[in-house]
Length: 88
Image 1 (tube, rainbow, N blue to C red):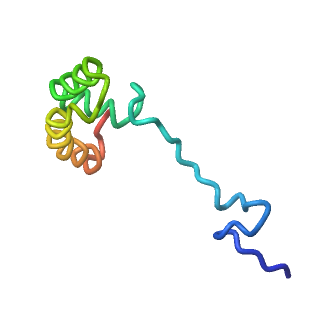
Image 2 (image 1 turned 30 degrees about the horizontal axis):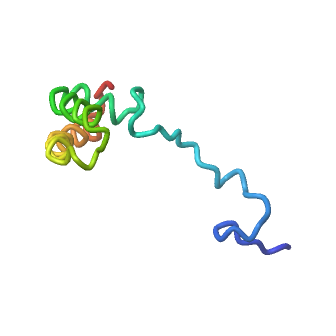
């Protein structure tokens, strides 16, 4: 039997069992689950942060808005992850 290590990329072809079935969304995409949750739970903070980024064209200059969004987002994501019937 041939010995191959699929975890360390020594094999030319990966097993189908190792393929990821996760769909990745860009964080800034309007249809990303992260953005939808923030729109529902923190609409004011999200709007202020996006407005600042558009106005300054530099996310690093909007850290006070980003910090406020993160503080609002922590319980929102906790709620979305722990509530079985949460809709987003």
